[in-house]
Image 1 (cartoon, rainbow, N blue to C red):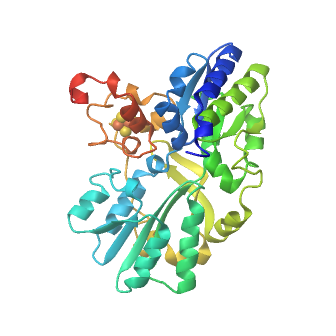
Image 2: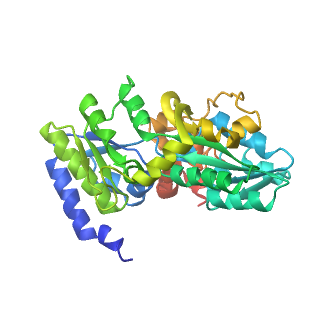
Image 3: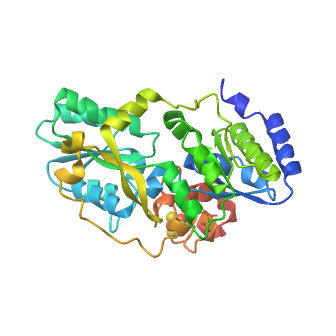
Length: 370
Ligand code: SF4
């Protein structure tokens, strides 16, 4: 496939692997922040190719995985109400809440619909003025501009029966929380390229300086990832700690100013719970005062719903890089993609799902169905 094959060239990949493994004088622990990067690393065996020069820690970069349990329960509570059309991207439907998921609400008669764009939900609301139509706005800075535009569009069209349950999270505060943790093992970051496409790279320079960690903005194809790793290892080996951009074909330092202006209008920064991690100050977005009448939490009065995480799921430790998914006692036995205990086993970007999907030969035969 043109434009992608050139970033999957095996000859160049072998050369980069050779450069990295020759350069490394010890094992460096590197966190990829994005779930898409995690899947690419595991799918292409990049972690195995780079052993023992690099140990990857799979960070909290899967938006579905870090959506807090209480927000999932709020979604379930709203979706089960009569007269509500609850719209979501498909990957949220199987994320377990305290007692059920959106699929089970749908099975019991709830009007839960999979949409491919938040604007689809606005259109549904426009066509169904007698219904309350809610979109589950989940994700990092990447998906936020489209969600913001949906709210702006609903306002412009006067679609007052459209609201959004917002659970947006921000990458830099999560990186800061990881670096501040006494258990932190991260020595360098591969920053998520698509987040930087929207937000630019300015926030990462001060972080690299303050914590003395190299941060390299990195893409998603095998050569992108290997080049990002090559650059962090080169910095680590020479004692440097600065921001670098290994994804210049997509990321400009200033990001996308048009998208940023919309985000600033529609959202405001707030404290957020991260599933498995806990509260991180100023790590999320909620609708700004101007658009608060489209806030589903307020419209359906579910903001006070708080619940505790299950002790069975160790996704918090996985998301902080303290254990690998396969070290969770439930991995592949009590927890599988068919019967997940945690969101990291459900989402297409979750680390547990990646390990299950691409490392299933490590599981006992009866689990593989052999
Ligand atoms: S394997 Fe399942 S139970 Fe264990 S951390 Fe992952 S999602 Fe949670």
